[in-house]
Picture (cartoon, rainbow, N blue to C red):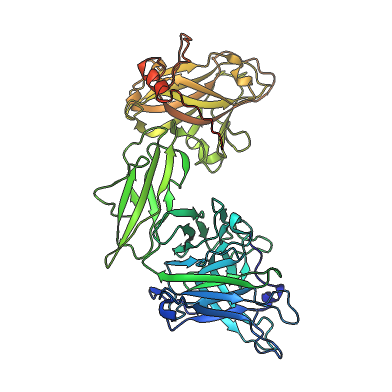
Length: 583
């Protein structure tokens, strides 16, 4: 994480809040023709001892004139080290482009490192910023620009081979985050310019995203995970002391530079083509989350849009095959048709505003799981919650519990306890579905019921089973082949061919039961309570049961057959080597 940005003296200083506004801060600055396009730039640095005797200010901000072209640029510079005595140079300097405008949703961008040098500097893009400039005189405990807001830092501090981008939330120039929101930019050749963008959407929660591009409108080079800021003490905020500062809801956009190290002294940063627009932020907060794995094939899409959006276009498809969905969604969610198992999908949302303005969204991806969830127990909050859905067969006593320590995946599982030394010598937990389940509706891909289980070594051997019942009252029980299964202290997957539930109408499943015992005394001693744990009950597509134990090593495409299709898979990779020799 980049260094904390101020001395402890700042705890004595309060930020004067600027009046929040909804003005659309759509402005741009090119610095062309050796002149500002804006007349409203407000510059400041910290520290700034201008009012102190003998102090010479060495922080500057000037347009650099290219004599052979009108395409000029800005240089922000500090020549004095922060370790200088008696007066240090500034550790931080910033220019606010249009202080009168305080946008809410905003996209703020700029060309950074215009000269493509390796000067070991840190560039800053700040938005939703509030600030004031403390007087530079002996009576000010912290003279100079004092600000709060969200900032995107682009750091060449460790040289061009180690370019990093980071998003911070800062209060009184103090970074209040305890968890890094930073990524390393791939590659080594970073002594060059890039286009940086900071998108901020929403009020509470607020979504803050930083991106780096080859150039404006060009390929994406690096993207930070979206920082979600709420009025609570967020997981990424400092906890000692608690730093649950509420989200910043509006503020000014500005560019800046930073170097808190004594050497090399100061900083020299170059900027060009700065813009701040309210009708610019891309859609955020996708569900399924970007990069999510194991997504349900029945998943729906949802997202968060910037305030300017009045409509949108949704693009969806397999990698490289996205197509526009018609008709376009009326809101910020979309009900997909059933997806394929174990398939990766791409999607994006292009927001449309008045003007008209269209903002192309980021491309998100997710991958569906190999199975369809029946119950993973994650939705239950406590024992009462799981018992409302899974009812045990023993009156008066409770035998179903929500388990948080012995789990197969996620954070929760079901614990089924039993005392089958007492009548009826069987203990069951049954889930009755509110609506009948059609387990034949997924393109006939589903043919297996899978669950994970484990027991404890001290359990007494006895049968474990799964029973299905349809809406017509027909039921069938499949028993695990090993009585010792309940003694296993490792998790095992039990996969049952749905055809084994003889006579049950799979299109009308009403109940699923997990039970232990065969109706005879288990032999458990005294009042002993045995138990098993159940997790991740799923419906799965075609699996190779191979009851004949045939040699299927040649099954290259995983369809449980060795045929010409496997030869095609082999031929596709014929003579591939994988070796490489560097001359």
